[in-house]
Length: 195
Ligand code: GAR
Image (tube, rainbow, N blue to C red; front, side, top):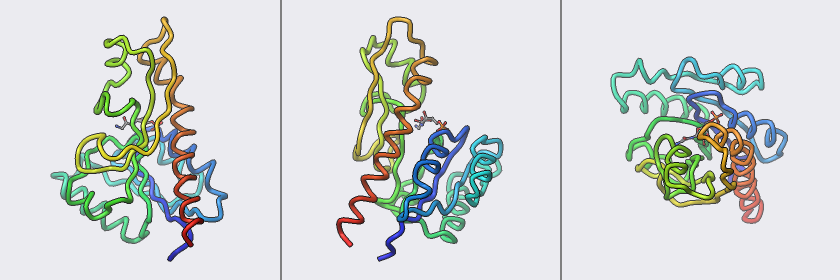
């Protein structure tokens, strides 16, 4: 068994979760961040990853005629790195059942809601409209359904009277970062326990 966890991170945007993961885990002896892939050529996370000296790849979803073409390119690129773990970090594209089956049990996602509440977009706005007293984020294993799959861990914050969707998103973000880091650390500890 390869004792280093080779981690690929998939992003679509600013990449703050990606940066927090890399910053906090890059020195871990059992971690190698093998690549960062974006489906968006404008993703701000790509220059950040380059600065952190992680190999990057853009597979522009808009230039792929369909999901399968995109996923074939993604799979071909990932095969050159052979990741043991794929972290979706603000990756805003649904992966097909075929792709998920190929990487079964190796893909984690972070979603800004207390799943199973509010899969999809505008999670904080929907929580406010429902007068929820708390919001949160979930790290879960990925299956072929959107923001679905076995939950690994959640974090939560209380909603304040003056909160908007934007302030909730801003206030939750550092907790998201810590949650994702803790989940990866938990997996690393499990590897250590079994080898
Ligand atoms: C994060 O809030 C993440 O939870 C969310 O996108 C944001 C990405 O921010 N993910 C989803 O909505 C997935 N369904 P980041 O690019 O700064 O990490």
